[in-house]
Structure formats: C-alpha cells, structure tokens
Length: 222
Image (cartoon, rainbow, N blue to C red; front, side, top):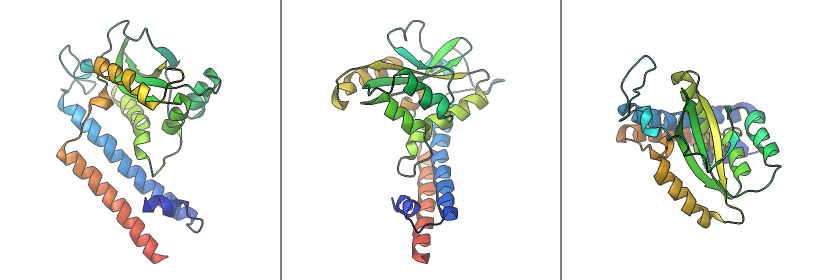
C-alpha cells in the first residue's frame, strides 16, 4: 500500500514512479512463475515442452466438444495486452452495457479448447478493463491473464486466447457465486486449479518484501 501511495503522490518524480512500477511488475511475474512451475509438475517434456495425453498434462484442462455451447463468445484470438483489441472490441460488442456475468477464458490449440480461468463480475466489461489496463500496484493479480498469454504464446505454437461469458441479468455478486461455482466444478480450469508450493510462496514473499523495503527507504529519503 505504501508503494501505491508513493506512486500516486504529486511530489513523486516520474522516474521514481517508473521505478516503483518496474519493481511491482517483477513481483507479479513471480506469481505467474509460481503457477507455471506448479503446472510443470504434471507435465513431461516433449518437443513443445509439455505432455499431451489422456491422463495428464494439458489434456487435464481440455474442454469436451459441445461443452461451451451454453456460453456466449465475446472475444476470439485476443491479445489482452492490446487494450483496443480486447477491451475496446468487447465494449463495442456489448454496446457499453453493464452486464452481470460469469466469464471463461479458454485457450484454443490444435483444434481443441482448454479451460484457463473462470471468474464472475457484476460488470463483465468493467472486469475486462481491469485485465487489460496498465499494471496497478494495488491489484497485481489482475495481470495474470496477460502473463498467461505470454506463457501460452511461448509454449503452445498457434494457440489462441478466447473469452466466453454467461450473462445473469439483474443479479448481484452473491447470485453470481452459484453459477460460477457450478462452472468451476464442471471445467476445473488451469489458473483456478493452480495452487502454490512453499518454494513459490517464498519467491513471492521475497519479491513483495523487496518492493516494500525499497518504498520505505525511498519515503525516508524524502
């Protein structure tokens, strides 16, 4: 929190703001690195670097044919780091309407779909804005989709990132919790399923400690 306060303070120089952003971006990368390391436990090397069979690896997250038929496609082959392509296109598609929904990020690869992340929001366009905006120190977890996109493109040649949603009009967050849970049980997507080991938690903790220590020292130098 102190780093964020320093970053938005009017007396903080542009150079210092950039330094804080770089430090917190590095911390967020550690979070994604931990997820990737955990996923690697279930995978065996092949020319693509990951196991593909019926019992484990990427096939654990494969979506059965026809299972997405009840969902509405919103974005296809999208780059979440391109705000105009992702948020802008979705905003146009939904005509800027506030739509409560459960949303589902998937990966298309070799003719199949794989479950990546399920979430809910009382405003699906607003939530997408969080995922595609600039890095925010107070909510680094929002960048997990962007980091997964980079990982996906480096490891799965020809893969695409896609977004589906299931609208629940006039429902609040409590009501959205029910269909979200049902979808989580049904699809068990990668990011939702991934935990973190003691080693990866330590990496994240050390990154956080380093970023905040630097912000404390900077505040004392003012």
